[in-house]
Amino acid sequence: MKNTKQIVFIFLMISLKIMAQNDSLTQERDVSKPTNFYTFLDNNFEYISTPQAALMGYRANLTFSFSEKNLLLAELPLVYNTGNKQYGVGDLRLRYFWLPYKDYSKIIGAFGPSIDIFAPTGNFDKGLGSGRWIFAPGVTMGIMVAEWIQFFPVLSYQYLSKVDGQIGDMNNTELHGATFQVITPIVFSKKVFTQFTPVIGIEDFRKVEQMNFSMEMLFSYGFRDDFWLNVFYKGAFQKDFHSIRIGFTTYF
Image (tube, rainbow, N blue to C red; front, side):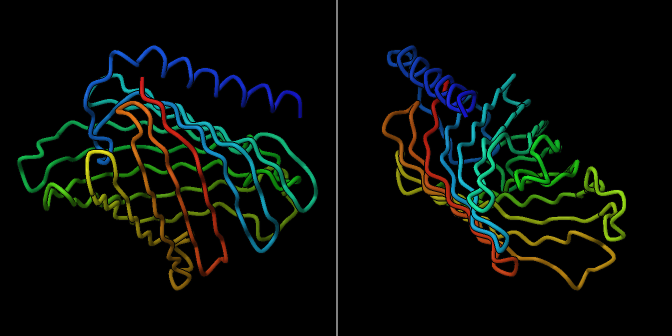
């Protein structure tokens, strides 16, 4: 538990230091569009409710923009399982996004491939992780409708490995599926925007009838150009899964 607190403290101190350094160096950013690449640090405090247990913790997300066309994300949650009183790191997420085309003056304003990788760093037996490697390559397109609203459809293939350490389980198999989502930012002003993201997912192509639907909602308020407060909710209603995050984003 001591190490967990130290990690959270380090990330918070990094964010405060970045804020101080950027106080006189801010420039106007449009952070509502997922195809605008910036370097930033997300600090989120999270609560997750599932039929099996309730989880709470802290999620750090460091996103690094090499250029306007290249983005790398690393995300690591620190999780506490309220059911069995276990805590530790969750599953590590890495994401690379390449954007070869962007022109917001066109109806099709952006296009590019990406890949998401989830590593089973969270202990599955303690209820802290999925126990699976997940690889999800996909493509994103930007549809420019108006200044205040755009649509960003994302189509992804999804591979899930067998659960680590469950060799004797007959139901423990590799899974091949897909997801389709539409990230929809709605901009109210330079300081306020929301994102609504409906998601349709098929975890296993052999069971297409078990299609899942979820909804993600994000509200962001910019106290400053380089400091935003965020409230995020995700609901996967068929699975009785609910997640809420409250945090802040600090831009480099």
